[in-house]
Image (tube, rainbow over all chains, first blue to last red):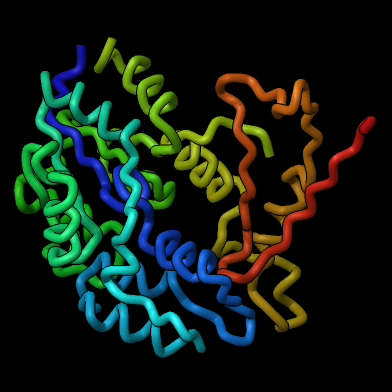
Length: 198
Length: 90
């Protein structure tokens, strides 16, 4: 039996939609064409938000600057009808009976506060760590090393759950077990394979 | 390619490719001094460029641990196109 004590769940892509997807869908639903001539570098902006080198307001401003849209993006628009992944959260609820479960929030703190007002998302986790507090300029090894320097992510005691396969690979290279999140069924399968749930 | 979309496998694949076809290796492709992606060309050459998956009752007939992954060997991020062709009776 492994001595797993703690799980780290990324917010964007696991329990919440990825910001890039959320932003794109917001425009898509409003019938706005994001053509190649007007390239919206959402992935780059998302990484800046993850690392905290971009504020929430600046994110919105940059998106608005890059689209010629009669419906500029806003926090209200971004968070309206936000669908959380209840499948992933049901796994969180189950894991919390036996383990610590930490939410790694790559959404800006003020946005999570707004989400909490509507959903109490944070309360379903033992605690929240904001990715932007790691003082990193990218999502690579340094981010994981910073977390480990703070006593988090102890090898052999933690599992990293993330929809981003590149980050899961980095976690593995830091000797942290990692699961690529796709859907609830597969997450449960991976946890059963590790004998972490029944 | 059809593989298991699992974090450990991705690391193993990356390590194996790096060991067999190092990204900073010496490649004849670099002699023309146009680009420095010899490793990407050789890696691409040993990977299947396409896959065929049967569709049964409207679903892809993949095994429990089979996923379809697209792996881009080029070191620089570029837009890619993927061709999906569905063949069969209507």
